[in-house]
Image (tube, rainbow, N blue to C red; front, side):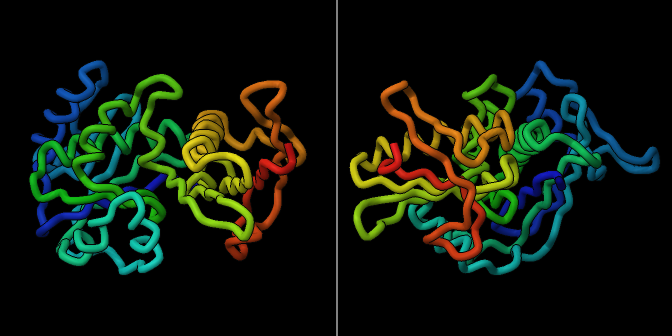
Length: 255
């Protein structure tokens, strides 16, 4: 499984001063080892590598907007109404990725998230972040939430990596995740005729957080729930709402 890729949108192209980024990273996460990495012939300020704890993270500056993705910005309207406008006016971006083959997804996500937070703290031109081509969030939200990158479960900012999108069904409401498959192999699709929107979203968020932490541990036919009287059966299937999407399908009607 490849490491996650974060794209930091810039109002104008900027080559980050990695010495300033390292100082910001240390100030935000003083418990971690933070320093430059890279070749000996590189100046510290220009090195594209930064050490965060036990990981090296690459930061590459691109003097152009990210590729157009209408689906991404359409999904983002519910969580970031100004996202499409910000995307339309940005003129450069940074590519951020933890290095190393076979890295576990969650540690790599935590590390990359911390570095993105430091980049935003050090570079005023940052205006948004696209995570793994699936989830877009404003820079200010990333700046705040990324401080929790290394918090214990369930307090790390998994909602920067996973979207939860509500929708209507013929008989009720539903929600589908976007981005969870990178951690758990499938997205969640939850449909209900009896739960409120808030209750449904809380249940999807709870299951998503559990799968981010533990990986693909829910098998076809397993039951989930917060009590013995509230159990829902999970089915591995292709989404009935979103063509071709492999999901963990949960229906409140199957309790």
